[in-house]
Image (cartoon, rainbow over the protein chains, first blue to last red):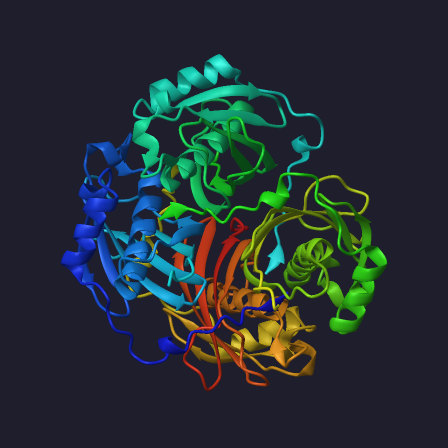
Length: 155
Length: 155
Length: 155
Length: 155
């Protein structure tokens, strides 16, 4: 009933990156070969990551818009990569919850771009949020809150 | 700030069905040909619907478990079909939000079965919840809350 | 990115209760004296708990309806008590997330009754859902999904 | 099943304010006398609003931290005021859903400050997000996504 106390002192200073874009991309290709080709990391900084869904016919619904499950997948990958970038490849975070608000119809046949940031990276739990827009438009298409369980360290 | 007052008097009595399983299946095949083959309606009653994700290799992540986006898609389709079953094929409900809690690893290579019910079917807004389990197990794998905007009637 | 694997074998059998209604009520009075008088436990079973918000003037908004924060508090208390009833009074679960759909206006000047159940009680994380209705009406007023972090056992 | 198409063209340009801080404060005092004294509007701009919970003993749980329901109330008021500031006092938006992630323990006996922004202000639906921190700390304590139904205009 009380608010969470799983605090993260390392979060107070500017965090450092444990993996860079080539390392994250290689990890994605190796561990998630089914979906790796769908995504491209545009930008990585300690405080946020920008990930792009390379929209193709297979992501679309009638009318040429990106489907809901593909927006969900983009949000999930973006926060997952943000966690990896901080903890390194040993971490196998698991998604425990996702909340997505769908606000506007994505532009037809345009990539979908997610800007994601970690709001908390605790010992057991990570929380991130994601804002998505279609390339060429500044209006947000969807926003997502994602939470992940961080497995205990294996010594 | 006040709780919603968009009440639905028609909801008080036992609701009637505007579409049956064959009609819903035909609608899905016609309007969503990319995904229709993934789903099967097991049961349809006024108060709930049971929809199955026919799990194949393309739905899996490493380790043989169903991916998060496919669980999202199952929840979305199940509530969408529940709304259609009540309002008929003219309604084009749009998903406005989704909240999914992922609770357990789905069983490897087993279908995923969603039991969905509408908690509200208002003039403008529908709300449903979904519980998912792997075939052959009773433990819930995930639960979802979905909300949809109901477009105004065209006279 | 993978669904959660924090499984709970003890959940498969019918669970047993570590605390009964008098013990839960006493705990609430002792630990949360500010709010304990607002709530009453109607029913407690291993699989679910029914908790009542004893609605008074201080819970109302203009028009005589229960305010959103009070509905949130009821959902939070109901799942918190459900966790305590299973783990006993040593556990100090902390709320990590709450999702509430407000569906109908609560009845004026009627108690609000929450039926809550735990969908997962893992080593680190508990997930529950709650359905709320006004006394004397069967229509759901609100539903909530709550997640809690379970602190590690102190040996 | 398709993403929302309830677009808002007026949102593309820089929006103008229909109410200023004194007008919003007066509205709150008049319409929500039970809670108005708990809140103070620090900043109002077309794109965001900063609202403070004036933390007193009645908002605290054991240990001196702000309770979850009070954090919920702060998020709800902040987005409600943001909607009013754009649509004016005739609008009576109703909260349809709230999603809150509780990330850290609020500082003891410090005000809680919410920065809120509207991501969508459609004809029927508004979506906002809120980030909360304790005064004197930059770490986010909680974040919230709120959705509201906008009632149709009465001509």
